[in-house]
Image 1 (cartoon, helix red, strand yellow):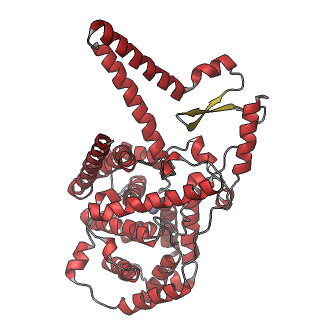
Image 2 (cartoon, helix red, strand yellow):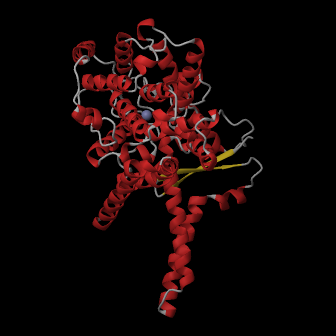
Length: 465
Ligand SMILES: [Zn+2]
């Protein structure tokens, strides 16, 4: 339906409201929620002052009203913090879209060859039992290892899950596949090869910790490990909100000059990216990661699936697509809800149940940094912010609008982490722990500790202010 949009400033921040075309000017004046919230807060403060002057104390009912306004404001802020994940696509996110994100620098050829040589040189070395056991836990510290060594560890994961023997994967083909995956991760702060390693290593830990080998067939375990390995292939460091364009010009929009001016302005700064065009705005990044995965597997020298039967191949392909597409955080609530409804009657032999569980496990692995020791997780948080800041810095240089959650001048690290842990991580990890109670100590407790850590930091910083 055609709509009118009014933009306004709240404390210097751009806000907007969308109205039906038949909405009168008087109605519009009364509907600006942030303004109304601010007015309400202002009126409450005024009332409080008057009551204290006249009565000397504040009645309970006024306290309650203040708490309600404060809690509502917090909820609004939380939604804003989480929109960076694509959980909530606000129009502000969409306004960020513009056609050509700067492409990351390709890795230098010389560096690539060095990694390949070192990987092949080390690939036949035997790792100690200590390292092998450590690799099966969320305590593993990726920062201690070079990229060529991480490739050796990935090879070990495929070996130790018996994929080579059970699924007829040739060692040389596995080397080529792993190196080609490595080569197709860009040199960007967060969504890089090291991130894909961490996500794969978390999946590997979950498989061992939950004894999943006794519950799922090897083919499904291969889907889990390979989808985590490939789930962010060729990520450019710009999220889906950046790729997806704003809606087209609203036909029939009234002649309000402000609206027309703003719409024309949007048209200037927004256009479809190639990915959004190719995938019709449907999870463009995740679809791209899938396409890249099958591009690598289409090369005979890299095709670890080539000795599978036609039926097995179809099973793995469908599983990889399903699991990689599930990493679009815009689908977070939908997938979590599917899993919740299954829980009381979960059945490992039921195809539908199994598929939802696999999506959940890939999602848990993808956003599991906070389940790791602080020395491992905190640098990841800083890298994520760095990736956001790169985007917002470019936008500032080009005179484009900047989303507050990506702006180095506006992001407040503890509070955004608190919202993320409370509203995203804990509900997701709690559901998986219901199915596998053994995971409580390995992933749920560490996330609760991280929440405590950021809450303390938040309090300390606010007191300092
Ligand atoms: Zn990821």
